[in-house]
Each structure stands twice: as C-alpha cells, then as structure tokens.
Length: 450
Image (cartoon, rainbow, N blue to C red; front, side):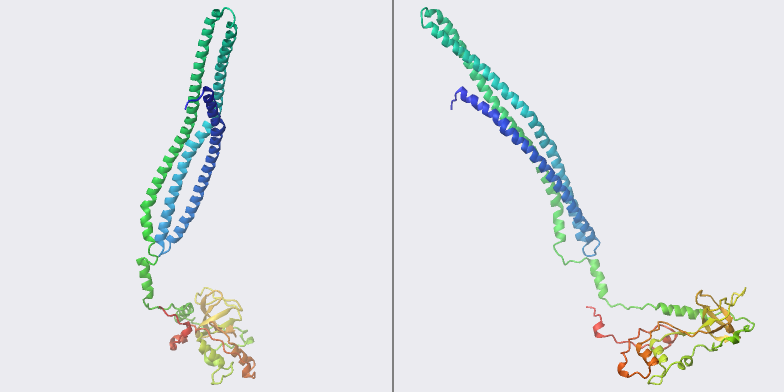
C-alpha cells in the first residue's frame, strides 16, 4: 500500500512521539515496579530465613527425644536446604536488580534526552527541505506568470531549470522522509529488543535457579518422606528400654537415714574409751539439786508411772511408743561447768548444756555421753548433772485421741475424734529385734503394671 510523503512523515512523527510519550514513561514505571519487586523478594527471603530458622529450632528440640530424633534431624535438614534455596533466590534477584533494573533506569534517563534531540533534528531537517521545495515551486509559478506574455521562449530555459530543481528537491525530500521513517521504526524496535533481551537474561537466571533448587530438593526429598511414613515406628533402643521396664525387678529398699544415724550412734557407743581410774569427784553443791539421774536410765517403769493405763492394762505412752516403734534416749542437763583439762577422755561443758547418755550404767560416779551442741563425747561426773525432763522421741507425733484422754479423762466418748493414722515406725534397735507385720496395700492405691 503506497502512501504519500506527507502520510509517511506523519507516521514518522507519530513513531517518535510514541517512544517519547508512551514507551519511556512506561519504562520508568517498570523500573519503579522492578524496585518494588526486588524489595518484596528481599523481604520474602528474610521472612523465609526466619521461618526456616524457627523450623530448625523445632528440629533441635525433637532431636533430643529418644523416639523423635530422626524427625528432628529431618526438620533441620529441610531447614538448611530451604535456607540455601532462599540464598540462591536472593543472589538471582541481586543480579536482576544490577543487570536489569539498574540498566533500564540508566537507559531510560539517557533515552529521553536522545529521543527528544533526534525528533527535533528530524523535524528541523524536514522543515528545511520543505522550505526549499516550497521556494522552488513558488519560483516556478512566478516564472510561468512572466512567460505568458511576449518573448515566451526567453523564459523557457529558466522554467526547465526550475522544474529540475523542484524535481531534485522532491526526490531528496522523499528520500529523507523514507530514511527518517525507517530510522524512527528502528529506534522504536531497538528499545523493545533491549527490553526483551534483558528479560530473557533474567529468565535464564530464574531457570538456572529453579534447576539448582530442584536438584537440591529432589536429592533429599525421598529420604525425608521415607522417615515419616510410619509414625508408629519406635527405635530399637526405646523398645529395649520399654521391655526392660515391663520386666519385674527385685527392688532393695534403701536404708532409712534415721536408722543409719542410730547405727552410727550405737556402734560408736559400743567401744567407749576406758573410764577414769579414780572415782568421780562429787560436787559439794550437788545436794542443792534433786539428783534424779537413775543408775539404769532407760526402762519402761520410768514412763509407766507418769502415764495412765488404757483399757487393755497398758500405759498410753507405751501403747503409742510400741505403735510408733521409737527410740528413747536419756538426756541430762548439766548444773555445774566441768573442764576436762589435758585428759582427752573427759568431756568439758558449761552449766545448762544438754548431754545424751551413750553408756546407760554409771561407773564409779562417771557417766559417758555426747554433748548435743558440739557432738563431743567423753566421761563426766554424774553429780554435775540432773535428768532432763523432755526425753527425745524420734519422729514423735501426738495423736489427738491421746491428748484428750490424758487432759480430760472424763470427757464423753462421743466427743472423741477418730484416731489419726500414725506414720510408719522409725527404724531403731527395738524394731530390728521385733518382726514387722507386712501391710496389705489398698486396692485403690495399688499400681498395676500393664
């Protein structure tokens, strides 16, 4: 389809204007959107790293479990692989920003100036050529008006010269318009080609990224999937431990700390140092105090006189003591200070100290005991002390029934509270000599091993 030079000139101008008014502004907008895209991917990779770091933490917690250790290892491997994928994606978009967005922004700024200058040059050259052609046509018209009169042959040669000039300038104008139109179309196409070429390069980068990502993920994925197919699978070590728990075991009960302390006390009192050879000195002030330290301190009669009898003819203290199986030790309180001097077998003390007797029999006025606040042991004169009225009862628990019966024996039976269950008997010398009746466990409190 043939077009007039004027139509082609309009197409050329339209092409230049399309590049300047449509393409370049769209390219500038594309640059801004590309920057936003890059920022969004950077934020996504940052969020992805945080996500897979959290997944790795969960895997670390699972890795310390005896049954979920494999799952924890798998979670940590998945996290590491995906973090590598995020790093590869980040590197791809760094190249996207450097090789595409930055280049487009630079080219856009330069192209606006270039296209404005090129279009103005085309317009000025076209105007100049059009002015020359218009002038030649005006000269031809003027020459023809003059030749219509006399001497027409005189102007014939000048008219031919003017026609040749017009024809040459028309040809030059057509050639200029054609070349200008071609140049305008090529300028437009070069810009679209540049845009396509840059995005092809970016596509190659993404293809390489996806290929590498696929390779990293597909290598590990089958093994990951295989380890989570059976949630009921338990490692052999855990199975062995469970089977060991189901197997009945003979349990040897640990000895009571109270029993160990009693054994150490009794074993230490079996072989005391020899008593002093001289008879113990009797204090001249001893008669001022009631000497109620018995020669054989521990006896059931000592306490039977102080308590009332129960319905079976036994004293209530004896009943409670036999039920609790406690150890009673005699303690005395010093009434005079005593200094051992250089004799290491004697015991030094101040008045008012409490001594636990370790040897129950008096030997020539000497008693052997342990000073409570220091733990030192030794012999001391029996006249320097008196019986302490608060005997030690290990783990003693007063029941409300006994307290009521002692303080108010005439109180009606319907007001008596139910007896409190006594704690298990303490381990002592008397309990080792007496057989212990095995207790029958309650069915509600019996633990049945499945």
